[in-house]
Picture 1: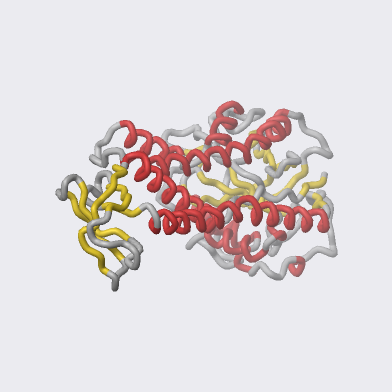
Picture 2: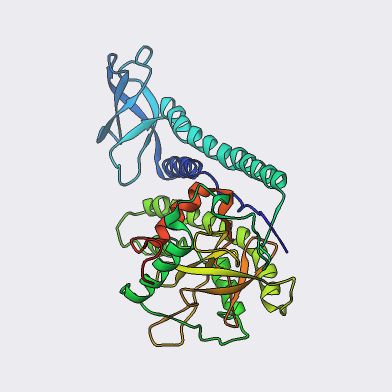
Length: 384
């Protein structure tokens, strides 16, 4: 059964997201000044030709401020158009000539850079990854037969401390000694998925931390607890727009995974559909589990083939999390969309994300494995 090297739809570069956020914020501030500022004709009180600015007065001379102006042509006593700034900058003003051009540059340049990153760089990165995938073809899940030509030299980029024996020792050690909730079999017993399919769909499609700042920003807009006045619409409105964009991106990316994963999890067993593999279960924190999959016939020095994150599920015991034993064997099925469904002891574990093929980026996989194993790595041959 082939597993297609489907690359995750590349997220927009972080610099592009930051640039878009800056451009959006500057645009909202400019809109705030344009809508809520007081447009008036102010009298020029003094002209500073060295600094290229003018001191102007309005409201019968009660309000005064320094604004940019053409010091070579403006004379004291003339009236020039200005915009008196709204709260919290009451008492200040800006001109209607130089400042709008400066604001257009400050907001337009980051905005155009961000749009270029999202609309140009992002598709180019995706197209490049697609070309690499097509050039590499497909990778088959290992068959349960001996392969005398495959040995520990097939992936020299991965160190010995991150092969099967050491990762298995780290998983067993962490399962015994880490001060975290224990891992027990999921509440949904053999012959079923690790959690309800409908609950899995909801968590997968809507599972992003962007909901928390979105709810906070929505509450701050409705209730002016921080006494920011209408400026709260600018500050928290920007945060809300960014969060909505993130949620929309996640939904768009993950919806296509739901159908293939559920069909693969519901289909019965078959010699060609489910392939045996060895696994090591590692955890970043309670509930965040990753299955490191190995070919079934390899020895202790076998390099990983796939990394498959598992969705959270409840354990059978009190205050436990649901999951497989730290080390064992699994039946693996390719969904054709990126994730792998793993059946262990009769329970089919639903994925939390697409699987990572270890050989696609050895350096990145090595760093991820080191992060997963943490301080619990043990040399080959240590007590397990």
